[in-house]
Image (cartoon, rainbow, N blue to C red):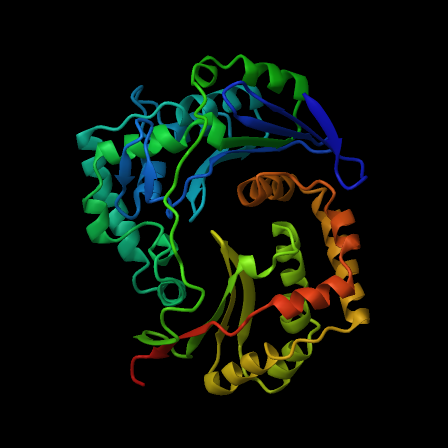
Length: 425
């Protein structure tokens, strides 16, 4: 087991790798009573086509990863994982995104017992024809529940606008039609390929005893009986750099129009930048253009162009998207302001340094939060297959010269707009 320090602060990270490839990260907090653990796999809704363990091509129905996540909570033993954890006052949940599926627990009691059971149930798949069929009705209701939600409609429609081939254009849960196609063989194919320890991470933080957890994990019978898979082969998609659709209108039960304005950016445009540098410089640009102290924020507030907006950055395979979501009864004016703001980007050195200082202060505050620390480690692993414990140093190393070089590489011309309008308009 190895040990490294977080940001030269009073916080340490321990890590080791099992023979079967599972990478384990432990973060002890001496001043906390709670703990938080994530066991996750690099398998999400966009992993539709791949080679299974026998080398055969597999094409899963859309929604398989999310369906599989649901079925993991049905065990052959008849024990309900939610009830098992709740007996000791510990919470449990799971989630599926485009690129990963995670199972997580949090609480204060019986950590060794609960970590052991987390490993037990995630590494014990149990799929039958009948329990798969039963789940289809449950997931159908979940899909239908979001059909009339304007925010979900904006998100789903925008991804279809942006992408031609990448499976991120489809809903994470799939459609009512696609989940009807899912059979237990689809679940076992996906599980046996992607739920291998070599494709997974375990991150635990909080009030923990590192040596005890190391021993528990290294001696866990179920986990250590699984052999390592050397390579997983996923289908690669020839995704064009332009957007599929530039505009789409939806009419729903809203009183004020909602908009999603997105830009599709190809990572390969930034040849001289690492993946984390791309995300960091793009984060600084978005903060400067649309942050709480930006001219744009002041202008749209003073002119009452929006009752609220937020900006986020997403990573999809070899693409990034910048997504601006807003609610406005002056949507046309707001959209023009957004477009204007994305042209001829110039950031003053003073503003650049101020954003860096605010960011560093935020990083220092986050390191004292168990959940945020564990989430950040896990997110780094999924996105970069590495953990950046020296993030403060990385922020300090960002410089205005390289920022300006980054801006020259930044092509924001591939844009799309989705509007949700009141039905009566």
